[in-house]
Image (cartoon, rainbow, N blue to C red; front, side, top):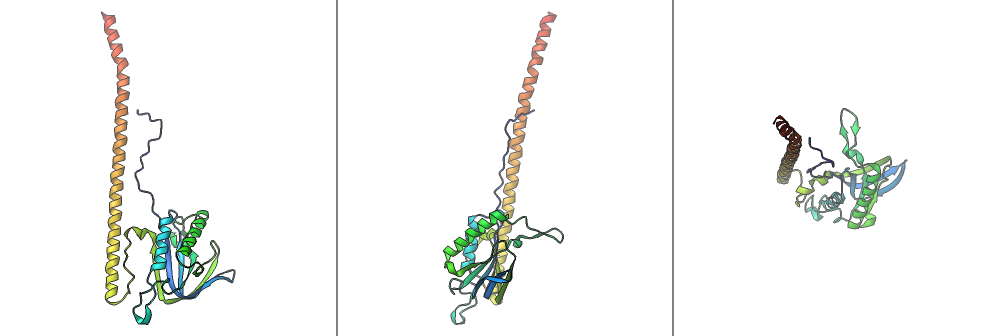
Length: 253
């Protein structure tokens, strides 16, 4: 048998990808209260519920921040169109609220949150997120709730307008602006979404194909090593038998 003194591990899988989430609502006003006391509030701007995935990295945070601050969710001047300006363009405020329940999975009726980043790590990651978004805009226009607290969130949604962003989309992100959901622009949005989903499925299929090829290569490598070990072991076992046979012939003579 093949005797390998050190563990033989060949892991060709790609590292897990983060999936930071943000639910963004255009608001006339919003506030956060803890124990009945308002701790943070904004006027015109965006209320953002932020969920941190257990595999998130700085690139995930940067992608989400770019989307939040750059998304054209506000109308232009003089009725020039409903999706013309970002929160930065209108000099609005942003109220961020940490929200791990965005990663709820249901097996039955009870939610499970194992895909969200653990508390101690997510606190640090969320703090870094706030620091970066403040550097990217005007610091005093970025407000926050209280991490880990039971909060009461109040808002007046303007529209209503609610969109979601996920950092998993960064690999196939388009630079096109958000479009309305009616008329010809609505058809364009549907085509863009169809193309996005098609590209995502293609990427997933390619990844699975690559993973299968890598695992097959690993299996072949292990099989080759085992065969070499069997040959070596077989050679060692047959040598003494040859000597014994020769010795027996000499004695017979």
